[in-house]
Length: 168
Image 1: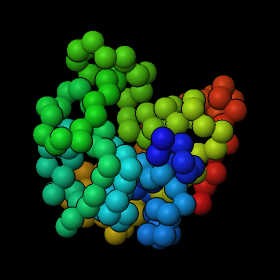
Image 2 (image 1 turned 90 degrees about the vertical axis):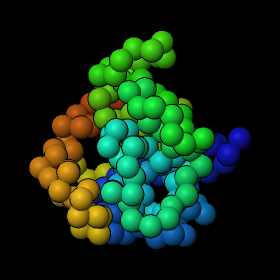
Image 3 (image 1 turned 45 degrees about the horizontal axis):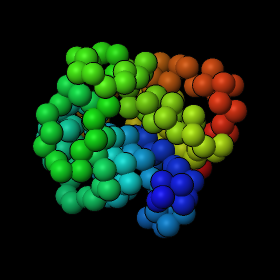
C-alpha cells in the first residue's frame, strides 16, 4: 500500500519547519501536525486534531492545500469526505479504540513508531519556539505552548518500539 512505499516524515510547527522543501514529498509520506500544512501545502495525512483548526482551517492555513486524508478527533463532526476519526482520552467515547494521548504529535508518533523501524521529523523541536512563517492567527493561538510536555513519553515509546527517530 502507499503507506508503506516510503518512510514517514512527521512535520510539526517548530522553528526547523523553515527547512521544508517541496521535494521532500517525493521521498517521504508526509504527516503534518495542525498548522504545518501552511508551509507544506500537501500532506498524506493532515492532522487537524484541534477542533478550531478542523472546523475553520482557512483561519490557520492561508490559500489552497491538498491532503490525502484529514485526521481529526471524534469530538468533531464530519465536514470533509476524506476525514478519518480517532478517539483520544479527552474525547467523548463513541465506541472507537481510545488512544492514550491528548495531542496531535503524540498520536502520530505512537501510531507510526509501533509500525515502522524509522520515523523522520521536521518542525518537531520541543520547547516553545514556532516557525514564524505560520499565520498570525495560528502563532497567537499556540503562544506559550510547551511542546516538550506534548511529547513527554517519547523516550519511553522509543525504548518500547526500538523505532529510530531521525530529525532532518
